[in-house]
Image (cartoon, rainbow, N blue to C red; front, top):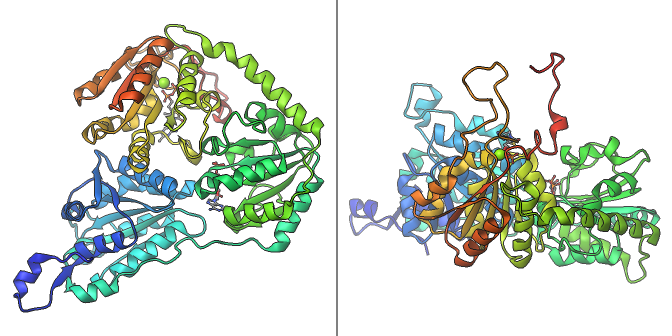
Length: 579
Ligand code: ADP
Ligand code: TZD
Ligand code: MG
């Protein structure tokens, strides 16, 4: 049913045909395409758009800052395979949302940033309108596609194009510019309804060529020490049963990139996560499934990858991804669902599993590493170290495998990624391809809203600061989110001193003994101060049980972390020695 604007209708007189306007056409176009949730910050010219959306039954969540509404929309896209929508005001609101749009594009998450914009005539002559900015031009380099709609009768097509651009092929961010004047444009309601477009098959299957499938199977068959690497593209595809079948039928050990953890449970017999160094170095053939050979995999070369040349098989929907860093012996271009089922068909019943000396060596290394780590995860030190605190959270996730884990920080991220096992697909959401700080509260909110599950958000104290004000949003919507702030008093550590001896504290250090738990109490949530793994465990268990918005201030030893967590090697070195 189309919503009809009543006011213009009255102006025109009751005998005239009903009218609609830009506001309502935008809403009708989104709803027609099953888009019902909006992440936004209101203001000129989109305040009424949000109000009308809410009136029409859409869920409109208002944030305190557009960047977090944007991160929420981006991860909503990842979780649902529908574009997540972020709605902002012009110029500064648009720019605040743009970081998240660029992040969505970089991570291959489907998202649409819809921003209101000022008068075209004034903006283009640069005559100084309220919040003047040529937003379309600025958005273009940061997204897959950018569109502006100038006429009400084009709203249906404009939104259809935005949806298709976001989800088809390699998913990504799309910018949609809605000038203020468009929203108020009036047109005949029946013609308006006819102008809307329901996008048919927005992300069409892309079948791999049969020769490409044969080539890939040939390379895998010849392998003596094969390895599968699952990436977040594989998690995004939502073909979980087939991915599991592929791993199990092939008998090939696998590792999972951080957000692909849980596609198969982390305690799976073929999971080689705890033998990562060994499998990267020693494998002779590597099949990438929805994972790029970017910095997170050392670009597929160098010390980490050992000295023997390797053969790569790569499944990806984006043909340009092939050979981006190293030669790919068997590119398999297509959507992951189609590629994986083609491989499964080709493997048939007689597929020969990899040699036992390889799989046994991988398992032996994994088991010994897990065993070595185990006692450290049981310590009850106070103040806590990362292992004691994360050991407690690991046990809680094992008992509550439906809980979605959101994770950011440096040490807090790197240790949590390797320590906390994930048992189900798309249950781990983190900083993604950029390693960006600030995704925490936005991702937690969208995860809770889109899935209805409990969310556990494990945050470095610096990381938390980027989006901390959104705990008011969490309390306002009463979302079942438990935020644990790993409070070590700074970025990486809390112990740096100002090398000049001056009064300012060091650049990486925060206020000592900050009480983040009291922030949560200020908004009516539950705040807990925890100094030991036992206290942490009790607080988080209670929060997941009650579903009440909770923030646990977990006091971590300020000496426990290391510079940049596990990626300190990426810091440039000065020839002038440090003071
Ligand atoms: P990770 O960070 O987990 O290694 P990346 O973000 O680097 O993962 O890689 C994800 C890859 O998955 C991208 O190259 C993207 O093109 C690809 N991808 C995303 N969705 C699909 C899909 N449905 N089918 C095939 N490839 C996909
Ligand atoms: N700004 C943005 C947007 N992203 C970033 N990644 C950084 C700055 C730099 N940065 C990191 O890479 S990690 C980090 C920053 C500021 C914070 C680390 O401190 P933390 O974690 O308290 O979150 P630990 O546990 O103390 O290491
Ligand atoms: Mg810290």
